[in-house]
Length: 343
Ligand code: SAM
Ligand code: SF4
Image 1 (cartoon, helix red, strand yellow):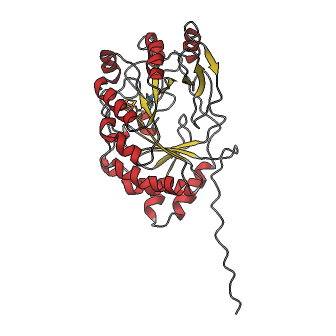
Image 2: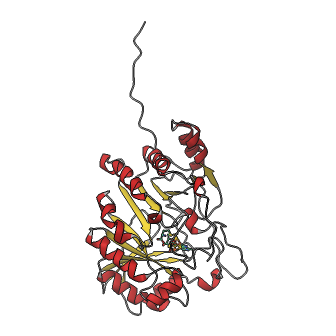
């Protein structure tokens, strides 16, 4: 009998969508819960998922690792507020092995900053280098009004701790008409003065909140035009793999990003998918289509069924979203809140 020739298994192919975009970035929401209730994100009294519906931290690790094996190079942990999930550092610690092996380029987190004073050093120890912190105002009363439950002082302590731990910080601020728009120059000077990047985000029509979206929505092309009265904005080709377009502010030498899903569709270069804390994969933030990964994950100890479900889902990633905010369109474009899919 001839001895069979044993060939090494071919390296698993990256996940490529129908438009030729390689999926190299996943955002993973580890909880839908939060210690804030930001007015553009959540309604005041939210119904959260029963805990048993959530993937365990071990299951989240398995899911992320299956994506890493298929070409994911960047993982962003988000929520809800990711740092309020009990034991969350276990997930960061276990995922950091993919950084050590070189399979993963970046492990990062988007947070409201409320728990950073406690976790910043541990995050840095797990190989996290850059984090996004959401902060829309520097005024304590306005901060309380926007977040309903947040404490600006705690977030500031968190930022101090993160910088002391050597983490690079990008501040994300949602542009809210008539709420924080007068503060933008101050936010720029403050963030850049502390060596942090700053990105403005347009409000997206995700989920019902009490306020009308049309009252919150401030197109960033208007913001940019107003900033030109005070600042020189120089074009920059800086990219983070996310949807922001950056300029360099000459006066502060800092980076300023704009995320403009409504005024400038950012879909063409999209390399991202999102996984919720129940293992639902959304191929696009702005579309309803989704794939259940929890069932195949739990059906077998091998990843075969899971990977098959991932491949089937990526094969129907849409070209882009179709967000609309106007007076006629009263319904949110997408029924789920941002806290479900994660920012
Ligand atoms: N809790 C964390 C935080 O606030 O950074 C992570 C999750 S939060 C859903 C992620 C990002 O989404 C935040 O920067 C938040 O400001 C943004 N966000 C939430 N709802 C939004 C909406 N309707 N439109 C635009 N951005 C939104
Ligand atoms: Fe919580 Fe972040 Fe949503 Fe604010 S934006 S309610 S901090 S999940």
